[in-house]
Amino acid sequence: MFGENEKNLSKQKNFWIEFFAGRRDGGHRSSAEEFLSMEAREKLFHLDGGKTLLDFGCGAGELLVYYAPEYEKMIGVDFSASMLDEASKRIRERKCRNISLIQADDKTVWNKLECSFDRITAAGVLQYLTLQEIDSFIFNASNYLNKGGKIVLFDILDPRLYPLWKIGLFSQDASFWNILRKIGFEFKVVLAASLNNRPRDILGFAHNPNTIKKVADKYSFETTFVKSMYYEYKYHAIIEQTKG
Image (cartoon, rainbow, N blue to C red; front, side, top):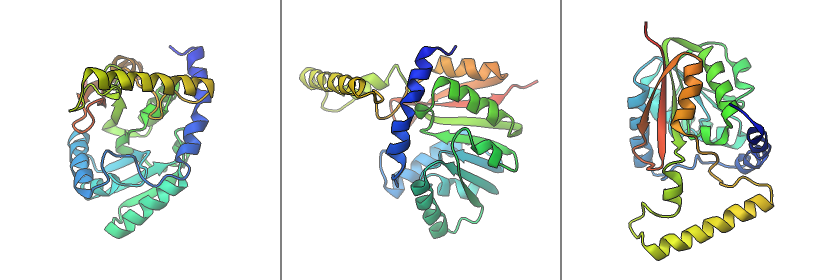
């Protein structure tokens, strides 16, 4: 399943580590609280209950604080100190006493956990993980999942729709010439990235749903895919323990 291409993609991850080192927002489509509240409600619908939650890649805590009223205990994890600093401020402002924060990445987080969870989630994270890292994440998460629990992976870039969105096909002002100009611009971006050994896309890797399903199947999970309500080029993967 994993080849030389995976190794080459891993080398580019240092770019994103530096990119997020000083960031203080999660890059949502809108930073308005009204939008964040609606996005959180969509995600809570798919999380569908549980009492304890691990939010990996919680960023600045924009969604985490909206999840808080629905859970008894929550842990937010991010590798960026600046993001966690913002998350901590939000938690204090909202007086969310059921949230703890941990600084870690997808490899170090597991040794820092002291309990298992009903829900393990990550939003807008898989695009920065290679397929091999996604495999490891799902395997490790399965060891910290309570019986009847779910791993819910939100906002995965869809390789079938993302290229169309990038060239403006979904835009209200889509036209032949506008699309042609955007295709030319994207070609220049990809060429410059290749010459400078940077990721081809600042938003990371797109992963086909069938690829995610194969990884989940490997660990005896059932997977349901749903389209994102607020990002037309993304989808969610709801990964559950097989029944029976």
